[in-house]
Image (cartoon, rainbow, N blue to C red; front, side, top):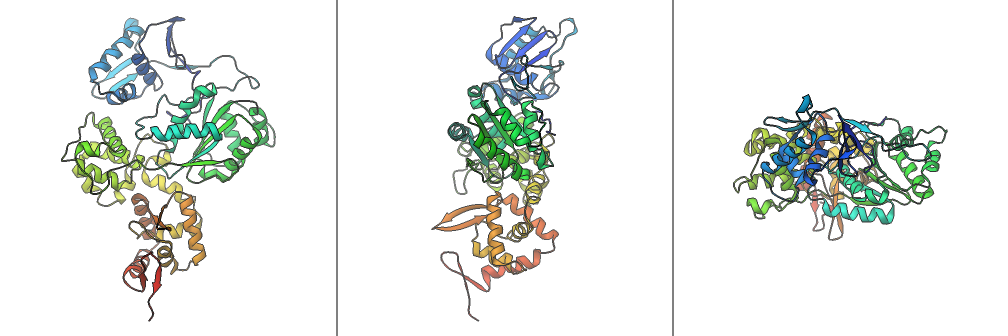
Length: 504
């Protein structure tokens, strides 16, 4: 029912133990034992061992390990080699045919031993929830989100029920996982992630939550039974990717909030649940260098979007140093990508293969962005097209029509502009206004107030996607004419952006 993820499975954080050979690694205690005896191992070495053992069989790049263990310090690969050598010595790696850590030439390190997760003690339905998986030790390459993680953690403590809101690829899940780790100790490690993406039947939402807690529901009212089972517990449930089963999630979340006192809820969604008790935090794009700002390497590297870009290229290419000559191109790409972390990561992979200037030339058409792929991402995030397909398929018919018909607008536009361009082809004004409101709620249109008037904007990647949809529906020429008329023909634009139709 719930997809098993390599990095984002279900789990409480502090009771996880791994066994390999005659060794036991307790992640919560940060202790390595051999036949029950604690082995002396430094903190950095333990960080490396945990990171590798949590991902058996995966090849972890040296740069990624360094970024994980020394996130705020610049160190050489020699330091990593020293600590890996200490781990190998503690494990007796290579002795008597036992191998645990392999050096994959030119790529990084891999934990090659057989890892067996251990239960954290005797548990029962009435005693403790069974542990079904884990949260990652640390999200990969989380940059520029420290403030929002702190703010969300504080708000969650106070309010108990919080929704992280934003478009696909903005980093909602990454932030939710970071918040889960930040507050885990306060919940005795009882932090559970329920990934709802693969759920196709909304009737199974309560069952999915129960499964993540190690509970089997038996009654005909699973929501009520779940509430009864967790009523006296203090725990945090993270409900990830709620938008496609939002009615069922909303009902269950409201029930859990109203009928328990210590259950905290953190949800991620592209639209609000709109139920009692819910508070929201909109996840914004990463800051990127604005047009006209200083474009040296040092200047653009102050922005989190560029920092993520550079670190992702380095992780793919092995090493990367941004030069002053390349800095304006990177700043431009980050602006083109609107600071969306998923888009930045996808383009970074292309840069690692083709170089910066070749990538810029290829991305002149933003449709190229929609085809970039990430092999190991969850299905809805493997390409930008998949991310936008996920959102588009959840729209009403009217919302789909309006989204594709406003695609010709570059930059900000007004509600009246949208009405004029989208309305000529058979949609009433009220329907257009409702559709715009719905698209804002579903995080597909960004909005701002300018002198008290609402203005709207499509992110560049969303606009490219909507233009493609417009072309597929054979509406591109007609809608483009309406767009041109709006600016150059029939309507006259007032100072405040309203339309005055010229008398004929």
